[in-house]
Each structure stands twice: as structure tokens, then as C-alpha cells.
Amino acid sequence: MNFTCLIVETRDKVGLITLNRPKQLNALSDVLMDELAEALTAFDRDAGIGAVVLTGSDKAFAAGADIAGMKDLGWMDAYQGNLISRNWDRVREFRKPLIAAVAGFALGGGCELAMMCDMIFAADNAQFGQPEVKLGILPGAGGTQRLPRAVGKAKAMDMCLTARMMDAQEAERAGLVSRVIPRERLLDEALSAARTMAGFSLPVVMMIKESIQRAFEVPLAEGLLFERRSFHAAFGLADKQEGMAAFLEKRPPNFRNA
Image (cartoon, helix red, strand yellow):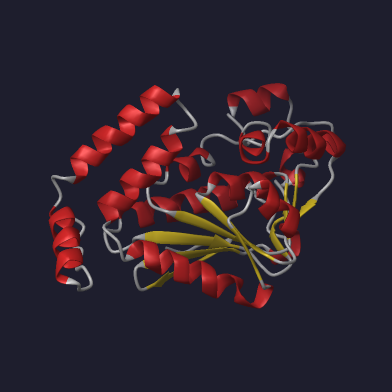
């Protein structure tokens, strides 16, 4: 795959995608998002990949959407073109674990892209924000929906209505990020976590991800039923037999994703 806005690598069972528009602080152009959708689709189909890390530069994960590309669009352009839908939705649909390793700015669409991942590892210099109100628009890729689910109504209102930024330490306290890590160790720790996930049974990891996502979509009783049926389904896996046998035999399991 040849990309103009991404660097895509494979590290053993882990995919690594680096946003690569440094002069634009990784602004999320339509081309970049098309390429990201393509890269994620390829990793989803690759049976050898168990998890993916998405990152940017030390200065910016992504400083927002590509304002230059949106400036001249009217309502009909945005509506008929389904702006921030077609390619962005592929991130949400990715079935394997996806870690956002965020350093520097994650603003507007950058913050929303990070929230679409399964977890956020933040460098100690990370800054999160939804400053769209300054541009005469509102967040359009989940900022008014995922942010309050992560940090609560009060902080989401504060960030979206005042455009203030939240640093990494506050973001961890608020529940937006999983870990705060020294910047120089961010990628190593994200890759290490991804390798850990990729070492487990891929069908089970995907079931866990799907079950947790379900918690935000349905009432508790429906979510519990979905979890229980997924739990039952895991008993049909050879990996379940191997995992329990390895535990009883006090040895590492050899999962075969089957």
C-alpha cells in the first residue's frame, strides 16, 4: 500500500499507523481519512494482525479537521457529500483493538478520532479540545456524543462551549484517557500493550471489544444478554480449551485464533 498522508508498518502481530502531514499538524483531510480507512480495512482482513496503534507526531496527534478543505463548502455540499461519515465511520467499524497514542495536540477532529479508538494512551504533553465553536460550527464526528460519555456532561459542555483545552493529567482524571506516559516512552508502551492484546485469542479479544461497545448502545439488560451469549459462544473455541488447559497445567497458552 502506498500512502501520501500515512506511514503504515507492521511490528510482529501489531499494525502501526502514523499520521504524516507534519506541515499541517496532521490535519485530517479527506485524502488522509480515505487512506486511514484503507489501512484499517487491510489490517482488519490480515489474520496475522491482532491489534493496531494509531499515532501522530510529538507535536500533534492531529490538530483538527482540514479547515482549508471545508472552508468553501455549503450546506448542500456537506449534506450530499456526507461530510465526515463515509471514511470516518471505518474507524468505528474496525473490529480489532485500536489504541490511539496521542502526543501534543488532539483538537477538534483529532480529539474525535482519538475517541473513536478503543483506548487513548496520552503523552504527558498531550492537549485535548473541541474548539469548533470558534469556527462557527460544532463538533461533527462525535465530539458532542462520545465526549460526554467519557468525561460527563459538565466537562463536555465546558470544552465544547468555551473551547478550552484539557491536558493529559486532567484527561486521565476525567476518564478520557487510559494512561499518561512520558512522551519519550509513549509509542513503546502503546506497542507493548498492543502486543499483549495480540498475544491473546483474537476471536475472544474481538468479542470483548464488541461487548464493551454494546454497553453504550443498549439498556443494561440487553447488554448483559449480549455479553452472556458471547461468553457462551467462547466455549465453542479451541482457544478456550487451550487457555483453560494451560492454566491448569501452569504453562503459557498457545492460542491459535480458532
